Length: 192
Image (cartoon, rainbow, N blue to C red; front, side, top):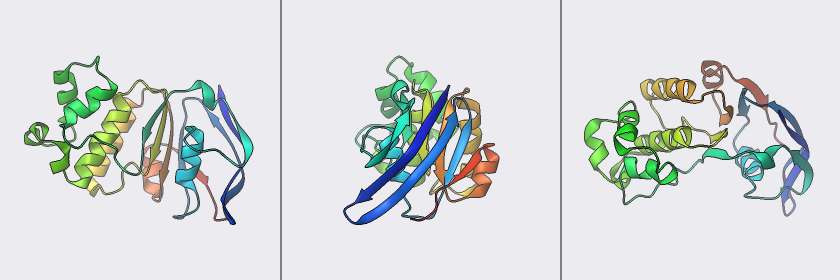
């Protein structure tokens, strides 16, 4: 199966975010969207998920997928812990199984704390694991490794490789080394 983005355009008033975006994504492949800040990566992702409408063009195949997103902001329930946050999207997973997964990314003592007490990098890791453990068949990650130190970033990328399980992955990044580490085809979105 292929996912087609055909002549997509989006503006906000007089400001054009992007125009004439054309892409063909193959199911099961890994893609990295690279572009300078402010050139519409997040807007494109929101359009793909149906959270925003394009002004022109069309999408083919995206209506048949269930997205597993990582947004730029973590979108966690701050008053509860990491295990409960993940079980909100996967209530069928036993708490102990989720706990084992989280221990690959977080210190053991953090699992008894609400995520409001986590650092930004810790919240990022919970968001990433939540998406990877979800039942979504199309992984759509907006700068998923942002704010992680080098060691944690490497561990998070290894986790993505292990947990992707053949699902299509499209992620935004500013770093070519992240694309290389995940074996991604680089897609450039140019300004204007």
